[in-house]
Image (cartoon, rainbow, N blue to C red):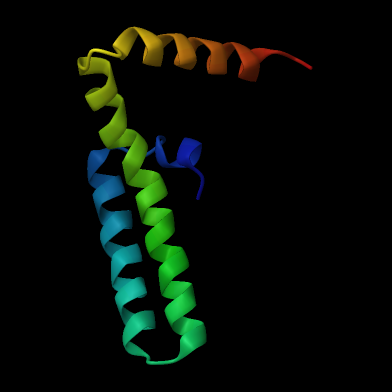
Length: 84
């Protein structure tokens, strides 16, 4: 699931997906094999990728550097909408 796809869910759906993915990561980690431990690491990394923007956006918007963050966001959106 990509970050864009995760934003299609509401807060409850995201919490359920987070819990399920965390449960799978724990199961993989407790299996005791190196390969499954690596898969658990990938799953937890994906969780961090999903949660970080949700946490970072309000933090950056409320900070002193919010003008810089807003400018970077506008530039990113402009680049995404560019048909090239």
